[in-house]
Length: 379
Length: 129
Image 1 (cartoon, chains in turn red, yellow):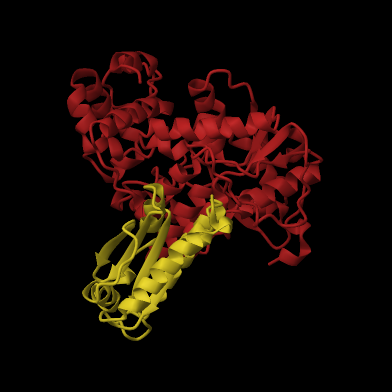
Image 2: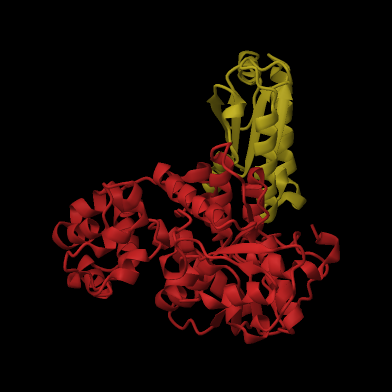
């Protein structure tokens, strides 16, 4: 692994002027004044040992809000990931959410001999190519369906909707029967070895099937495959596209019936990292939905309070509650998300929220806009 | 030799294992026993962690319905058991690596029969990874 000096250079942390704009916009700092991105950077520059053992490095939700304000482009999320790797090396134990099941599943998947049986959720109507060089990267949705069944969230609705849109747009694709997790949450939790193992298993699967292009609907898979695989795996030359980048898909107008008002929750990865703000909105509008914006949207969108399935606490819940309050205030019928994790987190917060609060329906964008293609599933 | 973890409750489940030991019954040395106050405290995360750490099969040993010393009726354990079984199925490891057994108190023979049967089933060709 790299030396702290290299990381400081790579992440431009040495340009930090201690101005505090990052802390002023940080959603975590809004609810927990002990956490300050500015102080984390300053500690990393001055006293690395105390930075590694600082419990605050685990509070960051990696929403990149600080990076949109930093005048000197300090790559704060990369710095946090590095500090977490060092902290793990020094013996920090993760306090895992959901009894650590997601972390265990990611590790179990990374075994090269694993032969998953992960396609049972696929509806018969989806057309898949047997051979071909384009793969749709599903993500961990089949596992989320099992793990979060109490919440009533069907995460596979997202990929099902996305694949229906691709079918309708005439884009050919197949899926990988033995696709592994992209490793986003392992690297965010400082587990570089686990991430590398998953990456090698995925690359072997992709190369074995002659895949040259990946399309995905999951913002975190998109970021990891496009940015991190490029960074960590020499010779990674597979083209990665997000479904909203395909003009054929954006041209579709599906006219959702019965939906009047929706509000769109920007995913941090898709929004602030790739500036994909207009495309999902275009998809919703062309589907006939009336779109209303929340108090914080686009580059100012509030995070869903995500974490790498670890250290989820009261601050994360307060961020989620605030986001739900903003969604309800719009008067929208549906809060639309483009990320399976955002949907899980916001649904979890709503389920644990106050009884008197009105409930808002939380749906996946691809499922919502593709819904009218399957008359049986109309609600 | 397949590695087996047995999660047992402190009450009827443990009494079966104790009775087996008291009667001098034997079972394979690769079986590790983990005693919990009640099987309802187990969750799918803990079961997945066992497999992550290299355990080949997990046997859950608890009280029969309405016999629980903590007044639990098994809903939680059934739910977590089926969740872990579904995860194992997705991972292609086969849900037969997980078994839930509810025995009458002090049934030492029953415990040895169940655990050896479980190990034999894991040895059968259909259960191999």
